Length: 90
Image (cartoon, rainbow, N blue to C red; front, top):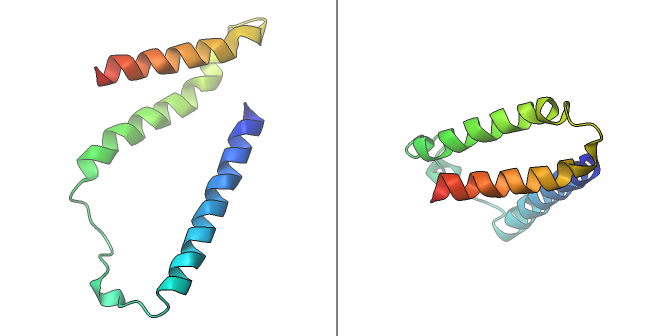
């Protein structure tokens, strides 16, 4: 799980860097006065997701700790995430 997470982080950072370089090549002299520095008009959409993801991220070690042996934790994680998504979005 940590290997997949580390690979996902490096891929994400790499894609961000590549997209930034691409935009800088595409628009070498942007008009910075038209870019909004802060736009909090839709923060209510993002806030709930950030809270849930933060809680989930920090409670994973506590969820996995009681399971011995931990061979079924991947299946447990997949089932719990999918059921949570179905419950929250239906």
